View 1 (cartoon, one colour):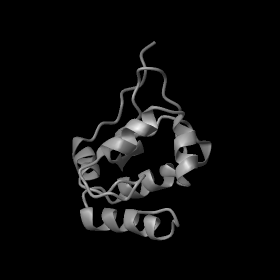
View 2 (view 1 turned 90 degrees about the vertical axis):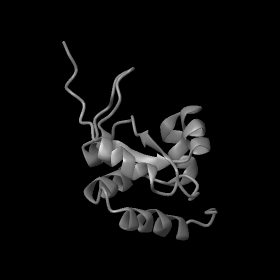
View 3 (view 1 turned 60 degrees about the vertical axis):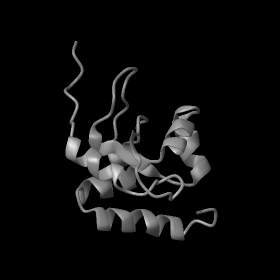
View 4 (view 1 turned 180 degrees about the horizontal axis):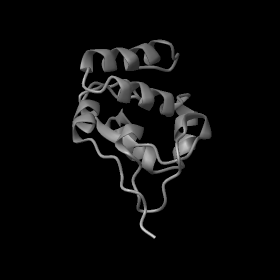
Length: 117
């Protein structure tokens, strides 16, 4: 049985590349980092091995943070950062293309975190 077709949005991925890093707050460019784990609270389904989530479930991470995120358990990475990336991915998807507002969302998050750079 074939998996359902993935929702792709090249323009949304370009938007994410122009935002600051969600993990560190560093300036762009960033990688669009897809969130793979499931969470019923947000209607996020799990993706199988070799399968990428829909582009709406991506957030901006600088290269260093993206590499770190892939080097460990993804949910543990986000717990260490003290960030729930799913509602942020949903907010960014809702305003996709608005770099000023997207930057504000990420900067606001980092202002409220004591370990923010």
